[in-house]
Image (cartoon, rainbow, N blue to C red):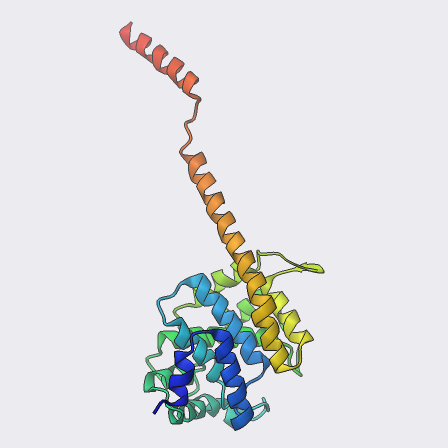
Length: 261
């Protein structure tokens, strides 16, 4: 008999995974809100950018479920330290394998699980960085460049994350892409704007999947094409002869006459 784990992992489409998790949250009251969709979308963009040798399907499923036992009360320190491990136990009950549950447990470092899985490093980056972009009761969300500085020098200070440098490159890449939406903004700021404007979870999922993803994926493809063209022109320029063919022939003829004399 198939388990819930089999069901959601066999589903390859991310929007369908979101819908499955949405209905699971309604039934079981697990933690699942707009911030989970927000961070999962950042993970999707990062995976497409970095082309890391991991199972995309597994990583994105973990993004949707790793915070399943997270609490809304950010002042409950004990729960903050234990929710990832409790979530891993819960996911085990739903039929997920030990490695998948370990990946989810390692979304933060409170359990001390070591050695860390590669996929866990992706979850950690997305969870830490994505969280800093969003408003909280005690502060407004940081700008992407500010969040990167805090990610590297505060949140992950003295911690090794194998994909940190690649993630920094990814964010810098996105920040160079203009998105026309009334005012010019970048893909990450557009996603924050969409998050802030859409309170209802089902509507947010729909807007991310139907509006945001097609627009941003198209812009990224255009940016990639432009970068390849620029690179080609630089290589072509670098290999271009210093003088024209006519001038080169005159110089060679003159050098031949010098040698002959």
